[in-house]
Image (spheres, rainbow, N blue to C red):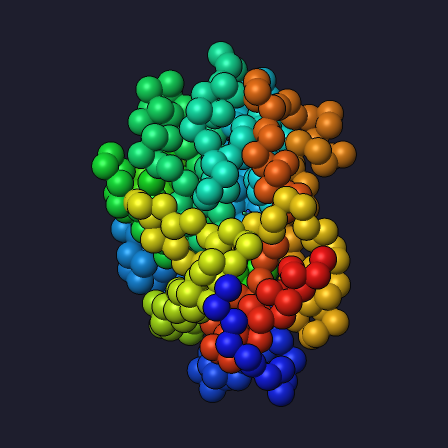
Length: 387
Ligand SMILES: Cc1ncc(COP(=O)(O)O)c(C=O)c1O
């Protein structure tokens, strides 16, 4: 491992340095806040529609964007728009945040857990095929940690079997897939894309927020309808919906951050490159970068050696002021909440379980400096030599 002798940084090390980011953008954020307060129009309004158009133009998505309350709602709205409901099965990766599976149960369908690729941690097309049944209506592909799943295989496969494809793009907004069969920005590669603006996400609000994206205007309209109590016009409710809104203040903040989005991603990618170089030859597995997707590094996750006690590593790093996190400590199918509502693909999900046991996320954010990273890597190396 290439470990320069480094000093402990003078300030605290953050897993995600939102304070640092917001210090840099403070004046622009203050101005946005002022504008919203002046107008005091907090629900819907011009900041929300401006954001929806600007998100599409900036990435660029060339899609209809529907702002909503959070990323979980975005997934729920997509499933509702696609007509997924009771009696249907939806294939999901067994290694993701709970929202990916939770929404399937919320619409009354059954989540079926498929395994992941051991290198990218994204849905394994072969396991997805083993999860398929005559009841399968859709799949939710998660582009985990910042990199697209194998869409070259999954998109034609979904088309062949008449399955609707939802992308859970909460962690990969801005990633681009350039495959043999499939090209384009994450979120536009299937029927509908869903993202989250949770504060620590790559495009984070100062509170909750989310969006659904679709190139098909009818699907986007359907998502908007369900998000608005099932109503197109006030007090005329066509179906049972929910209340899920991106509020004007969050949209105004997100508009500010969108102006910096490409730079924010470039900073994450530069930090990932530095980690890669510093960890070259080490005992940990560094993130694999697939040939067809850019990686926007929402997380920088390493795989610890199988023999290693992960909690001991985390404790030792914490003692040096270095935070780490585990995304995710268990497979979704092992969650008590999923015991009654889901089933596991034939062949089970050993790769998801192995990842859950060994994965470790290192600090990753837009303000990360080489000094901090050198210290993190040096301490990780020391720790691994003793645990
Ligand atoms: C992969 C994934 N899906 C869905 C979500 C849900 O987003 P939210 O927290 O905005 O509801 C998240 C974020 O936490 C996520 O990481």
